[in-house]
Image (cartoon, rainbow, N blue to C red; front, side):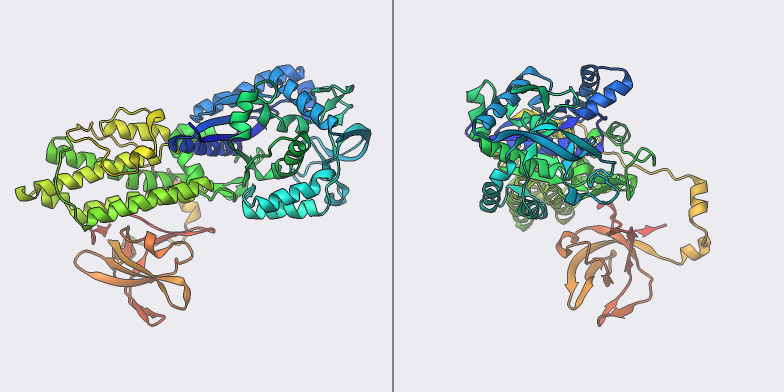
Length: 632
């Protein structure tokens, strides 16, 4: 393999337990690792734990443990969680390992030989929780940490300093010449603004506690935790003692660091200046993601709203959890974890769209051809359309994945899934099956459906590896996840003829959220009678056309089918949807609402939606339900 890819998560601080934030970062790194492997890259994927520092020493003392006993107890919890999340990491590093201690001493020696370390005195404010010295211009009158909000300590001690200020101009030049170095763009702008305020030299040692790597040039000091921790990225790929491995995965590889937004400055300022001083290549990309809230509120133990990945997996399944985490928000911005949100994703995206396509296809192949994929002849416009969309999907997914826009990549895949569900309705296999002369055409339709499912199973494998294998097994294929590749699915015609499909088995059963009766009574006081409700006629409608309305930013214009009739309707959801993505969807429609003119257009009904503080979403219906079916 010529193409190399090295991706890292931060090393997680062992003072706490794995949580939804650490899970999010690690799943993201796993997904891009798996995708790069699909693209033929030789991938090295690193994660691990950060085990030194004053906070560890103090926590251990309170628990009646030595720092080493504490980290040996906590670090395995991260390994166990990553196994539970089906993380495909190549390596797991601990900063208490000998290989890491040697690597830290080596880079410090190099930096010192270059004249970039000197002895001085530090006096100022320090955050033990963040392991960070805080400049006075970032501190308010209450002397609270600007990042975590905890009380800062006044520290006055002898320290060794790294001449970080010396590399200010070099770092700014590198950022300017490499626009993708820091992502998202607004994070890069924040970093540039911070650097231009003037970099100060960095204190890299402490002498008021003992739990750290001893500084070789002065054993009375231990190395400052960030200078220690950041070096892990080069430790794992052989910086200390394996020059061949280091050349392969660092010097001649695409290097990507995925981190949370709270540690962007350490990675985008301290780390590259360290490397510049040591004469080592800086990473290619540093990408920072946002934080998660829970049901719209900041997570905290006091509110009892902290999301536990283990419990969520038990409730909803591993792949559903992985899918939701990367589908729900664009990578880089903050996201909200809600029970309704994940249930909606499972019911609509996974059960209705993907699961329905798989079950209907296998069921029809079983019904019409005894479960065997046979050869047909010919190609019509519907076939050409799905093949063209698939080619477009491959391009879009690759572009989005390379930009770590996971949600958009999944959106592209689901657009293809929705199109294949529509393809079933367009080609009407149940009608073709009634005419013996159309058996060859029916075989082509069935083949295209099975072929599309094979391709979909490969495309979703980085996100949902277990689901991918389940799909492949139901399609009668015994391929292993490591043997899948994008190259194999670029062209149409991968499924061999005469292959026998397995029995259809729902991979994502629908989930109903339980609501207690007393909660309903408390929340809803404006009751109506059943007679009132019976006056409203709600039917299933299929969206045939969707367009923007000139001069109305909020409105979309729809043409919908409600069985034998078609209606025009306007809806104020333009902010939340692109018109083209709605075509073919089946939704709920109030058909007996009095028509009203809006912007000169007669709106003949109403589309039903869900409304939250953040968005408005159409209520989608299983595509197998006929247009015009009444909701009772």
